[in-house]
Length: 124
Image (cartoon, rainbow, N blue to C red; front, side, top):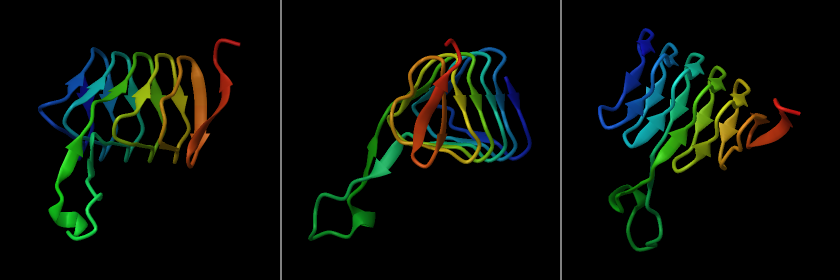
């Protein structure tokens, strides 16, 4: 694994062989990153979110919910991408720079935008 300047990864996450975290990337706990994954700078991969169901208690006091977030093998994640908690990114995926990934991404998809949508598939 190659970790560039300012990147941080939780010790409770896993990163596969030959993967690279770009400058200032942030990977929260309970994230699984496959092998041969490359990330541009400022990528954020989240695994938890605030609870907010109670209206009688401020959100900051309701705690957080933990999710498992997964990135498959052979994935290219462009600069400034955000992957939200609980999302599963398949194998051989490309995520365009600046995208916000809110839903699972199938194998071989090229996605982009906010929220990220499938643009096409690499294997077509």
